[in-house]
Amino acid sequence: MEKQVSRGERSKVINQSVIQRIKEKYGFIQGEAYTSFFNKYVSDSILKLKWKYTPIASKDNKVLFTIGNKKVYFDDFARFIESKQITTRRYKTKEAKIEALYEDFKATTIKDYSKVQLEKENPEYAAILDEYRNGLLIFDVMEKNIWDKAKNDSIALEKFYQNNKQNYLWKTRVDAILFSATDKDVAQQVKQMLTENKTADQIKETLNKDGKVAVIISKGIFEIDQRELPQGFEPTQGISKIYNKEDSFVIVQVNDVLSPSIKPLEDVKGKVISDYQNYLEEQWMAQLHQKYNVSVRKKALKKLKKQLKS
Image 1 (tube, rainbow, N blue to C red):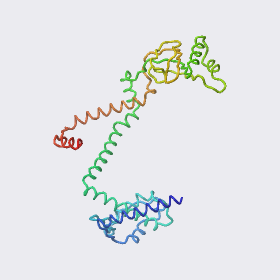
Image 2 (cartoon, rainbow, N blue to C red):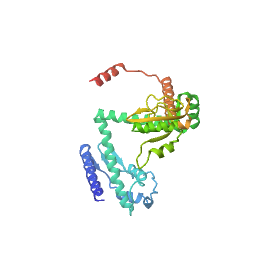
Image 3 (cartoon, rainbow, N blue to C red):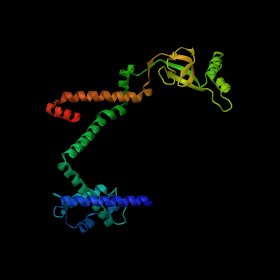
Image 4 (cartoon, helix red, strand yellow):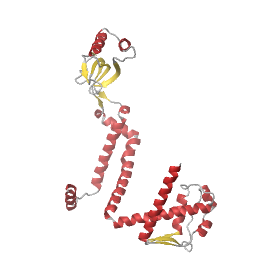
């Protein structure tokens, strides 16, 4: 708790220092006193977070303060009060809350003014901000027209899947039991027991005893190129030879060989959504190219290439 308070105090001091530097750089003039007017203008409903803004008459809409060449009016603060009354901590009195909101409004306005001026004074910074804003705009458009549509339009997704099912195929698979041992003699025992029609449970009971695991057994359906299967494995029904795999000896008991088949949508939904998003993006880009003429400023492109190479 002490550390949190300490960090909060340090942050407050730093923030005040930044505000003061901005004031000194651009100039700050305090305007009309606001407390008397706003203590009457704002009702006690603000303590219940239910206060509603009403426009301030022009005769009462005085300059609250001036930062640089920007005049800030009572009405600006009134709108801020309505929008921020819920986000602030609770206060016992209306007056205390208005004062806290004013300090927040003043600091926010001053920092926002500084950012605008920085864009004007620093073209490189302005370009970065512009790129950031454009990125957000593109993100919003893409989210609405592509990503959300691909995730939420189940009928369109099903149709896309049905039209492209051949892209979602299982390779040849085996329904198999894998036996893995670090000792070749144990692997040979496993193979002998399999030829004697011993079950996986029987092999496990016989070889894994006294707290020692001599053989690891895995059951499942595996595609032939899955890493669980040994390199060079031949998908043939029956008991395989002993394969050497990563310092282990592996035997595969193949119960069934499954031919390539189409994967159900529920098994590949993530991949289908991704492919559908790419499809929608391509369609969208094609529509944009048809609607708008695209021209390349060759001199600018040449200059950019030169900058990237340097």
